[in-house]
Image (cartoon, rainbow, N blue to C red; front, side, top):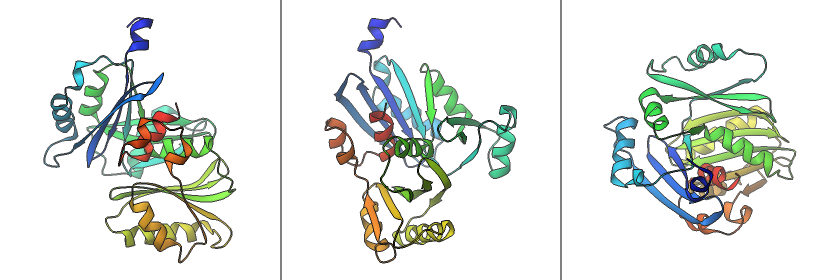
Length: 267
């Protein structure tokens, strides 16, 4: 692909989860060129089969893409020091944390230089091979994107807990300035379960109910969680992407996942 073609070809950002696939195309030099597609997953077939169905149904192969970036959403991830462990050990470490990991799974990594940690996460091998066949592809875990986002857009708080909610999943990240102190992911179908996990992590970190802050982001369940959590935590703020990012078409799309929006707009 020559330089002129690259400048005219859109970026394709894909978010993959067991709930559904998000496809977002746009020209980096023109944020208002964005198009967004959500494809609900059929839970009776594999992620690879779901991807092929979405790719064909929405005619996504009709365009040529300058860049492809993929978010693999999952609560299965772990963090290790970047400089103290050999790459050959990554798979062994990951499988020791998640013993049920299939042999047909590839372990991927995101290195967070500012924090000197590497995030390990996984993707089915057959889906990874299919994605790689599309061209040069970058892979991200939601936990990496969210840590990177709050590193770049520094909150005024020194110590705080981030809760990112998307459908039935919640990521919790305890931060002290740019350093993550604790991170975990939970599957929780009810708002009461989300509150329970949040308060357990808050207590485990020893955060003050009066002094430290809870930052919420994600889908509309963040508003419901805020209403419940304010009975226990004084300082709660809903991190609204419409207030943080410059106005453009992407901000007007309803229900776009926060991590996907942050990946695109923080480039």
